[in-house]
Image (cartoon, rainbow, N blue to C red; front, side, top):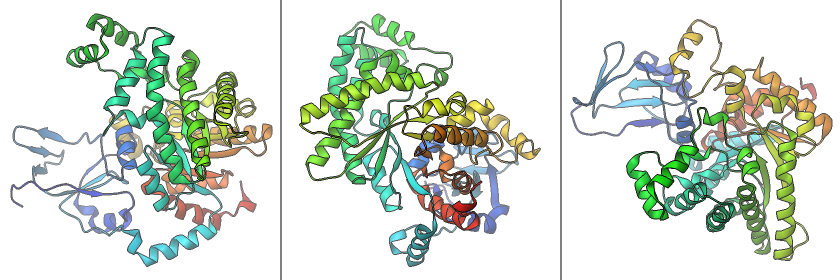
Length: 469
């Protein structure tokens, strides 16, 4: 093939993996049974990019720019390989691909028309930017089931908002934090407003800041020194504040609603940005319907605590903007088993539940989705587990928690809106399960929306809602 540099083919999730795999299964040189559901893979999928991680069979040789598989196959820099992010298979060579330009595919449009006439469950999208929202609309999403607000601190044009967030994080007093938050609010409102404008009245579920704060601060000496200079504080002082953020298990630590409880001003800034964005759009003749989602909750008292902030800021924005009412919904992400078990209490405050099945699966199994590559292949090969629980919902365990959550939540609030926003929302078997147990919607990355729509229609044919289990 020569030694010229050739880009890797990306077989995206919206292609036809069954056809490709059926034709070329014998050429598969690698497989990753634990790497399609890691955080890196999920983020890439949201971009419409294929990502496979956790390929433990690869032995890299950076000196000779090649890698060798366990079977002895050698792939040099510049050689073609093809990836399938749905199955986790890596193929040697350039496989023939099917065009995914849906604007030029009459058969696709006819199929999707039938699909939308048949399905009984809505399909929303998980997005990070207004551009993602445009993709979601293009692929037929009827709303945003998860808008991750932290995206603005990564990637293009993130320097200023990230600096302000870091300034807030390392602030020593509430006064300092509020000053940084006031500046940061401009960027938060801008992205929320643009996203709601794209959706034009379709629901936009906005998750309040979720990751632990330590993720946003530098940890190496050079970057700490640079940030101390930018902030005008001593390196030793900054290092002390960064060290104070360290947690042994940050994904189970100071994150999500716990940030809002510890620092109410963080919640206040986000809520004000949401309400002001909604009012400004409406006053400009547009439509907006934000759904405020509080993440990582485990008790109704957290929802009560944050709701007091929401109601106070709501009144302040209405007075400031001269309006009598702002349409919105207040709810929570159910991603901790205790929240599902106490759903009857959670529904006293929450108008909607969105099951965060990624974390709910992690906490139910005690598996880290970023670290399962070392043992999951053996579990699947030995049939200890039938499926990767991060790909398809474990209906016997995690599914039971979800059903309990829905039943108990709707016992308290019969009109409770229920959906999921984990990546299971793009898995056909999981979509069918969500249909059968009476969910209102599923939400997945924009590029998986057509898959979810088709699965929803198939579920309606196989199990009409009148026969719901």
